[in-house]
Image (tube, rainbow, N blue to C red):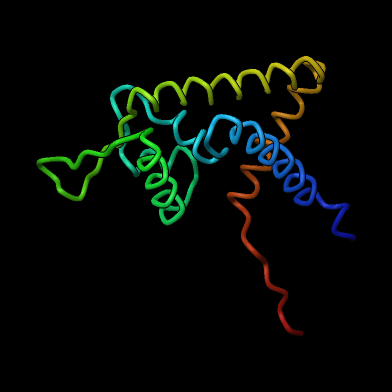
Length: 148
């Protein structure tokens, strides 16, 4: 089996193409694809760092770096929970609200483009297949061959 004939190869190259396209678009608005994705996941009532990590799948070290960058850009601010000093909630600034709207519009427009190019039956099948791959990958356990 060659590398370019595996399911994971096509998943990775497809996502890399999408992420790169989002990065090109996001850079025109002064942020990255990862930052836009994080902004989309911060709502009016704020979000804990844990909630953001869970929603985005971003590892905490990377998330911390992106949040620091977003704070430097003036898109977010953080508040420490008065009753639990370990808990930090992230909120959007007015500029962050604008950037979140831009990020949502970019995602919406890109998805409308994809939907206009892929017939509904194919989209449904693709989504079902991706959900299945996701479940299978989450449940996969390496089976080691026994020496015999």
